[in-house]
Structures are given as structure tokens and as C-alpha cells.
Image 1 (cartoon, rainbow, N blue to C red):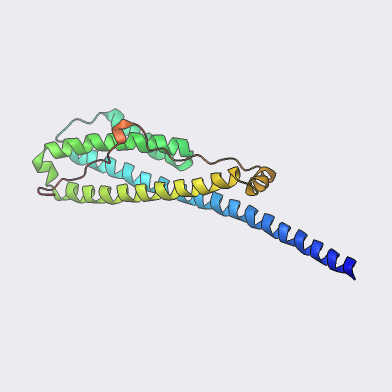
Image 2: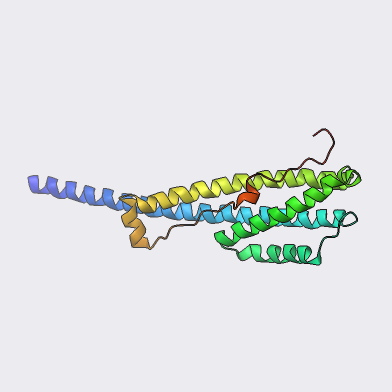
Length: 190
């Protein structure tokens, strides 16, 4: 009788351990999928930003000469974003923010451009996209933090090793030129 009770307890312990391993495996998969989905949303938002940069450059070309290289660069970034790794997404983010800052500086230098309704509406849209990118980057990095923490901590690290899990990279914001978000204030009194 005692042997039977011990056998049942051992079986329950093995089942409990197996269930916990399955839970950890599923959590790793859920975090990886959430990270990939969020990175996909960031790619979409960056495409929106790049489209708006093109539209703003078109609107501002009467007032400033935008090199063909700038527009070609935007086109290349837009094409590359679909398959970009997190590191490449960070680079595209930095470069597109740099170009956007230049265009905004031009727009703010010309009151007639700044008050033009299409440009004003585009700038409002840019602000919305900037907020969306910041929110998505924050979400992605939180997912990566949990995923990487689980890889580093026991006992989930054992499951991570069994499934060959590798740490996910964070999205980097970039250097000093990005300490501030691009200022978007084209209307007087804003």
C-alpha cells in the first residue's frame, strides 16, 4: 500500500514537472511570437514615417532643394524594412529620424510652408506616427526583457537550453542626435 502511494506521488511529481516544462516552453514561444508581431508593427509604423517623409519632402521642395539622394535613401529604407532585423530596424529608425528632423527644420524656416494645410495635416500625422513608434518600441523592448530574463534565470534557463533559445536583441534608439524627438510644431502658437 505504501509503495502504491509513493508510486502515485512520484507520478504526480513527474506530471507536475512535465506540465511546468510545457508551460515554460509555451511561454518562450508566446514571448517570441509577441516580439515578432510587435517588430512587424514597428516596421509598418516606420513605413508610414518614410511615406510621410516623402510627402513632406515633396511639399517642401519649392522651399529647399532636397537632394535626390535623400529621396533615394527613403525609397531604399522603405524597401528594406520588410525583412529588416531588429538591428537594421534600429538603423532605419535613426536614419529616418535624421531626415525627418532636416525636413522639419526646413518647414519651420518658411512660414508659408508651415501654415499650408496639407503640410500642417502631414505634421499632425507625423506626430501620431512618432508616438506610435515610441509606444511599440517600448512594448517590444519589454517583451525582449522578459524573454531574455527567462533565458538567464533558473529553471527556465534549462528549458531555454533544451529548445536552443537565443537572446533577442533590443531595439536601440541611437546616438546624441536623437536625445530629443523631432519637434513638430508648424502652427503658430503651438
